[in-house]
Image (cartoon, rainbow, N blue to C red):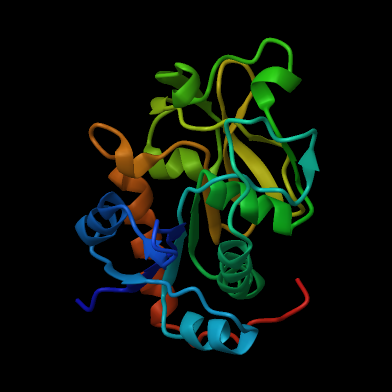
Length: 244
């Protein structure tokens, strides 16, 4: 069987010499490969035209973790999280919109989940621990480790993971306050923090934790993406609709 082509977005780093480099944690690549997909690095493109053309080559998309999301921000960012480089944000928005607008298979991880929600008008706490009373520590940098999440019954996420509860890693300062239009909550931490969201049409699934970095990795999420991408790749891809 032909491997579905899965695009994976990257971070953007500036070296001491001033070079700007795209970087990708190998764990994402391995997770997609184990799931039967063909991992393809998404280049940071500067135009909608190029992004649409590249998106047309793909069958599915993973939007990886990153620094802060500032669209739809509630409150001010704390000192221990940086804003994401504007060039990365612009590129991520282009490729993500191309997929969201066409209802194509997408997995958003941490920043990727938050960005998708923001694109649909959702809001995000700048620092959920300090803004919402009773919130536990969710940042590894502040001493967070792992915690359970309750999976919403009847959700697509529940079908994918096959469980009512999970124990996940903790790597975030921000958290979704209100999901964007057409997105519903699929899992929460015991303190109420949103840990997973999904689209009503089933094309998008987003998680606040990092499934690629769990021990063992939560491969079911990548397997679901690849399975959906395989079906999508056998159908005629609709043209993206700009102005999301």
